[in-house]
Length: 571
Image (cartoon, rainbow, N blue to C red; front, top):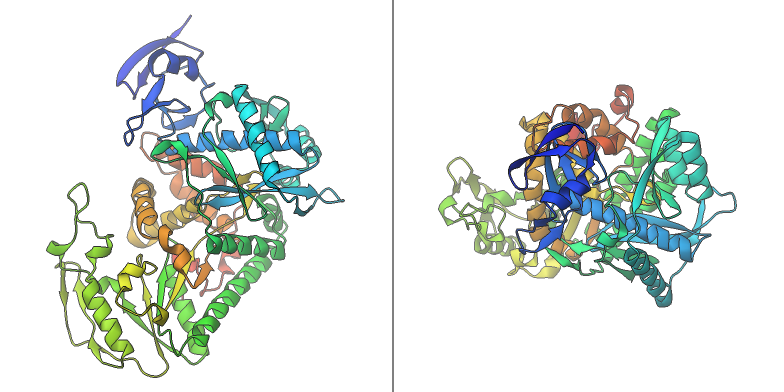
């Protein structure tokens, strides 16, 4: 039998193997586990990167490759685990409620929010959720444990578009059938688990026995599917009942209903039928209404709350949101004044350092909190203060005679990563501050059980903006993203429930828009780049979306928040 030569990145060695050998067999031979650096725990191999492209373990090698086996400690390993766990959940729901449909709606900090719905009489719409009792949740968990204990193999089958569409229509999954129809392909890969079929847009683990760590917990009208916590792989992520975040995501779902977009399939159909401009106008009107609603709340508290703090994760549109909100406040007779929190950095040599000995500019204590609190209290007391200016080139703060005073109708708007952290303004009466959380929280899904990551949506925004404005390559943006996310998890997400109002900057038409700009940028990333794996994953995701045309993009108003990322903004 012909042999092929492989390089395994895990053991830094070359191996000669028979052509046609599966990755799972190779893993069992020379890399059965991977080590989690944080915990030191040996983890099972879940998938592999073959020449930086993600492959499931049933993939057979036929030519020389560079291979890296990955476990739950790798982002693509975690995604592979979660996709596979979702199929186990799907199997359990169909066993217990054969006349109902599982919907995996959106991501929560603790896992995935899921609902069970009843098909409508016309077979194309879903009626109100099937409400779950504690006994229902116990039965679902028990059935999932039985499927996992049976160690049933997942396997993939190629089907024609007609066969797949008929199968998913009969399975009460009209969104999935609509998505497949909108793509216009001849064949599709369909996964099977026992007698159950489904589609998942990425590899699965070899069998259900790999998926022993999970939990489900009742949440709202459905439940949260919990999976292992990053860095603590033997425990699920603790449940956090963040009601304000959940309400914002539900509001987005309601917006989808208003616009008639139930999933990517109907979104693709809307665009293909020439209705993109109508969708753009409606989405922008919904945004404007939300800005006005937040401004009304600020106006109601104007006599007491004179400071408006705005925070949000990277590429959430904080800058544009601040400007749009300021305009709406002006309409009500208020006079917004902006204080840039970056000017309150301490001098460079006083900046805290991280574990690697590098300056940690994202630390709360990289700011002069004493000066900030003192000046805010003086302004609230009617005094005039001299606002500092930070020179980033020198790494020092200067006072250049920039004086500020709050008059009767003035309000202060401040935007920064720590704006929702009460420690930042601990010396200021909390009732004097109105806090706004801005993020791009999409609950639009590819289909019934494949949700779209909010983080992916923001990453695409950042790739487009950084390349256009800052000259940063898509490769560099991708490689920095993990560090960005780590800072958000530390400095922003723990405080989002402190907000008095939340603005969701996600737009229903933005993925078709971002595809137009991001796809050619991602295709420039070379196969030998460490960012190639992520580029391929994002490209595969974008492959399910119909792009806007240049003429449709031109219809986006210059005040749109998305113009912050694609250009042409006038605020």
